[in-house]
Each structure stands twice: as C-alpha cells, then as structure tokens.
Image (cartoon, rainbow, N blue to C red):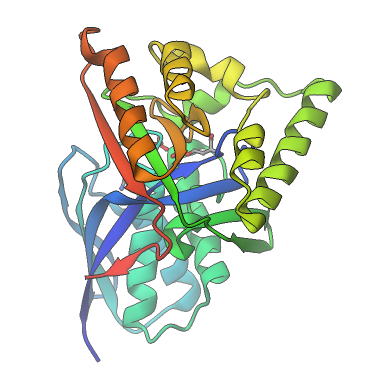
Length: 307
Ligand SMILES: Nc1ncnc2c1ncn2[C@@H]1O[C@H](COP(=O)(O)OP(=O)(O)O)[C@@H](O)[C@H]1O
Ligand SMILES: N[C@@H](CCOP(=O)(O)O)C(=O)O
C-alpha cells in the first residue's frame, strides 16, 4: 500500500444565496494542492505550508485540527505528515479553510485503507472548520468531498444530501484581494430573523433544490435570493450592489456573496454568458484601484481529486 498521496482540494461556494450554512457547490478551476504522508513517528505534523503565511503548528492550522480529531479517534499505529500548497487565499469566501480541513483527513483515510465513509469524515472536518470560523458548519466542507451541489441536512449527526447539477451551469467568481474572516462575518449577523423574511428564504431554498432536480433554469434564477444574510454582509464587499446589478443585466441567473465574502459569485446557463458576466464584473472593479481575480468555472461534480 502506498505511503503518500497528493491531492487537489477544490474551492467552494457556500450558502448559494438563500442556503446559509446548508447549501454549497464545488468549483473546478481553483483549489489547493496537498500531500499527506504516512510516517513511523506518531502524531500529526504540518511539514510545509506554501503560498500564504499560515501557521504550521498542528493545533493552529485547520488541516491539523481536523487531522488530529480523526487521529485521536482512530489511534492508528503511525503518524502523518501534511504539506499544503495554498492557492486559495485565506479569508476569501471560497472555502480556503474547508479545502484544508477536508484535504488532510481525506488523505489520511485513503492511506489507512478507507475505514471511514464521507459523513464520518465530515464530522472530523467540522472540528477544523470551527477553528477558522468559530462555528461547526459543513456547507463549505461537503462540496469539497462530494463535488457538485450539496445540502447539509444536519451536522450532528452528519447527514449530507447530494443534489444534481444541471449540465449547462457555470459559476463566475470575483475575488477582491481583501480578507474577510468568516468568524467576523458571522459575528455581524443578527440572532433573530423576522418571520416574513424566514418565509421568503425557505420558499427560495425549497424551490432552488427543486430547480436543481428538474434543471429548471427559470426557477433557479427566481430562487437565488438571500433576504437574511446578504443585507448585513454586503457592506463588507466593495461595490457589491454594482457587481450584482451588472451580473444580472448581463444574463446571470443569480448573484450573491460567496460563503462569508468578500468573493461574489454568479451562476449562468452556458459558458458564453459566464464570459459576459465575468466582463461585467471586471468593468465594476477595473478602475477602482482594488486588486481582484476573476474565475470562470464549471461546477466540479467530482470534488477532491487524487493527483
Ligand atoms: N490551512 C488553512 N487554510 C486556510 N486558512 C487557515 C488554515 N489554517 C488556519 N487558517 C485560518 O483560518 C482563517 C481563514 O478561514 P476563513 O476566514 O473561513 O476563510 P475562507 O472563507 O477563505 O475559508 C484565517 O484566519 C487563517 O489564518
Ligand atoms: N455558511 C458559512 C460559509 C462560510 O464559507 P467560507 O467559504 O467563507 O469559509 C458562512 O457564511 O459563514
């Protein structure tokens, strides 16, 4: 059996407008690379972290925290080294933390002969995600592992539903190079929600799930609205209203905050419209002095990949 595994750990879009903490989908064109290695010395060791200045102490890196939770539960007679090559900027809103939280334990599970199923793995990944965001939510973890669209039915016990991905769907992401910590973006949210907003939101999430099952792009477009979280968080994102208006004017099915921001996502039917929307995003930021990246990506239906 091999002692080393190399992985592509993809970025994700959590929440998908109306599905705060429950919905997410997986991106294809951006992600980190990780190597997980079985070693004789017992313990979890982060031996390399490239790309961004992240801690290599096991307890301070989400990859280490999720790995440690799994390691302590399984107590294998070996240790693991973890190398992380980060392409997803921390605090991006496209699942920088979740890519690492899932990557380490997916790799360990493979090297141990796959003793755990996906939902069991998510239970350990939640421990890593909690280090970054201060809360256990799996909406950005599940798409890394399963690919496509996922719905988190519950975190305790972990229950994940895989949703279908309509064939022509593309995502466009604009990522202003500022950091919004998920923990901070959660702290600004209210504890209570007006009933009329709750009704709108659960109508939207129900119809969005139906739209994915029936590949109904009009219904999908009609459901991609967030009346609960976006009004509070959009202030963290420069020119959010302009980005959204431009995306919708140029044919996007919907547009909203990706994860906890600052990235903004749009979904489109087809690649040509995705290109138009990426140009529309570009127009908003091009003279603003803000550094940014734009990604056009098909929905990644496979999720994490062994390289
Ligand atoms: N392996 C890691 N990958 C990304 N962020 C990490 C990692 N380990 C610790 N962190 C910390 O987690 C925070 C980033 O997570 P978060 O705010 O959720 O960003 P994102 O929305 O991009 O996932 C930062 O404070 C970062 O230092
Ligand atoms: N539901 C969470 C999702 C955070 O996703 P991330 O990609 O920003 O880590 C939230 O919105 O707080």
